[in-house]
Amino acid sequence: MNSAEWISRNVSHWLPSADSLKKFALATAGRAPLARVSEAAKVPDEPVPARVRSTRERLKGSLRRGDEMMSPRQLRGILEQLRSIVDSQVSEVEGGRRASQFADWYCQAKPEQRRDCWFLMSEQFAPDPQLVLQARQQYELALNTADEGRAEMALRLALVSPRARLLQRFAAFENGVRFLVDMRAQLLAQAKSDKRLLALDGELEGLFSTWFDVAFLELRSISWHSPASMLEKLIQYEAVHDIRGWGDLKNRLDSDRRCYGFFHPRLPNEPLIFVEVALLDALPDKIAPLLDESAAAVNIKKASHAIFYSISNTQRGLHGVSFGDSLIKQVVETLKQEFSQLKVFATLSPIPGFRTWLTRHLDETVAKLDDKARAALELVLGGPALDAKKMLAAADAAQSLDDKSPLRQWLMRCAAFYLADALQDGKPVDPVTRFHLGNGARVEQINWGADFSAKGLKQSYGMMVNYQYDLKRLDTYRAQFASGKMAVSSRVRALRL
View (cartoon, rainbow, N blue to C red):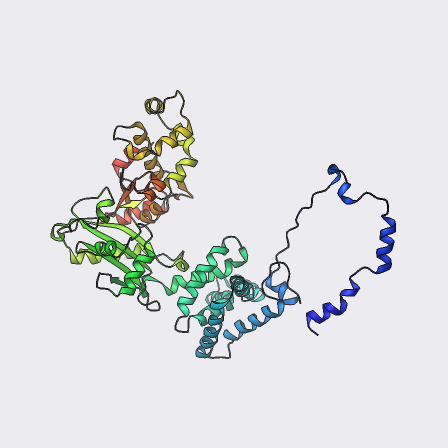
């Protein structure tokens, strides 16, 4: 008997009988209807949030509840398919074939069905807690004995989850790695808000860190003569300065430009990360000339500066897998081999979080002003006291501020403080600063009016920054960064609040 038949046969037992309805009507005769109850006596209905059931509870049930997409019966069927993929009795080839079949269904499934699959992978394929406990106890007993190494290996094996084996089987078929990367991209959106998915997310990140190690990546040069499908990827994935069309892309791949990307053999013709480089004769302080399609190409024989003006990750599913630092190092070595005259390797980078940060920390920055700077700002803003709303409103007119403007000078000083002193857990708040300083660069120069586009004004009132890679001091700066000290040039230090 299925659930529908059982409900139809037994529903009469849940309904009140005719006699009980009659008794209730007599007992309530003469009473005021509920609508007449005084407002003060009303108790507002408070919605009681439904408790989220784990897959363990759902698999034991017979009916789905709340917003659960799959019924327990469907969930058991999916679990059986996943277990068949990881079955130790089948070969890698057969396991990969089963994984491919499951992936075909998954790609057509609804988002809620995919989410249920994530829960199953996360909760039903964990390490055996009893085996882990026993292995840990044996390891502790074996410390400082001849059996310590063997006990350690046993503990390692106990901690290897069936989940890892399952994901490896998915990687066995032709598009399996692509499938897993895309699956994690979907998963990441919910993993932060649902702790039940953290195990699956962590397993994927750990596997990707191995599979996408720089030792398995290939650095390739991307030019105007590269396949059209690859060039379309550049347009699609450019994250810093949007590529406006084929003319814009051709300018970025001109004779005085270079573009490099990391590629993985299981994701052919799709860069995992790429960097755009301009060959110049000086350190740039504005982005517009680099993006000007009508500008003449620089004589590369006289170029002394290699400027990284855009670095874009293309795979959301590889979040947390770091290969940007290796990309820059390899690109520097490649450029040095092609252009021996290059002396300076630097960036022209956005300051994406500055405006948001300043809005939240305005009082803090104002408190750091000396009397002279405070008086100059008060004079400009027309008041004896600095008003936060007035200051932020005036800063919106950044394009009209000349180099002597107290407001402009204050904004640049705040930007210097933000880049060099605004820390969280001992690291820069700004993600771009954190990336470059972690790779051994230093904050070299803050540029006013470097990007007065709508995006540039929204991010940082139009300011950009140069990070310089001093090849002789990379290890020194990287060590400083690890100890919580930021590498900052003297000119930027002089600006700080």
